[in-house]
Length: 323
Image (cartoon, rainbow, N blue to C red; front, side, top):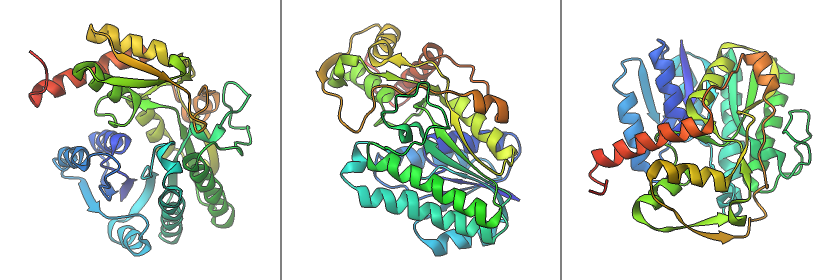
């Protein structure tokens, strides 16, 4: 029996696959190595995972229903962590059809194959972005989440609703986890932590929304992975669960923390916050604590310190750390 991790060569997917392999699971990963960011990063993640005998990599696209069905038929998949997606809120407004093709049609292919092949538990990665500019703080799962600000959260909310249909019709166990601003070592280069660290190192300027007066609820990768594994281990029928720390900080404070770690200043330029981005993300994680035993343990300053140490070691290893 195997666990399928879609998007298994990506940031969260590779960390999850490694944690599952370390506890003795058989893991099958599918990834199409798209060029949303440098595919070489995902190739390196996959190469590290391939050192585990219980790891199988399938290079393929979840938009191809035949590929997805063959995956389930060949590998006796009993649990799924569906992390593959087109990510990026602002980019989704430039390519909305692509985002819906991957995040909705691709999810449909996986749900359909999982149902037909007797999958026991299906965990779907969703996003805190589905809450949009809600006035209800902290973000709670009882919120309707029916006013998304961009195509990306709209596609993720659609996937949540589609998952409910499969639960209703076929009794599938499906848990949708709404991730909150996941960061950590080997993070995606398009996300703020890596962008700030790269810019501090090379002296380039970073545009900062509203002068840094926006708030995000950052969740360290190890805490996120622990939450996903807990969801994989607990069939719950159909549930939507927030997965975040519940302690938002301003972007200004976030940047200042990295500056202190680096011992140098970031060059910034204030720009208006785009209409795709809410002023705050703020997780009510009480449901995750109750149903999953979720207990995030890495505060943002510690998480950034760990991330900076990884970043520094990585840059030294590839000869890009200044003397």
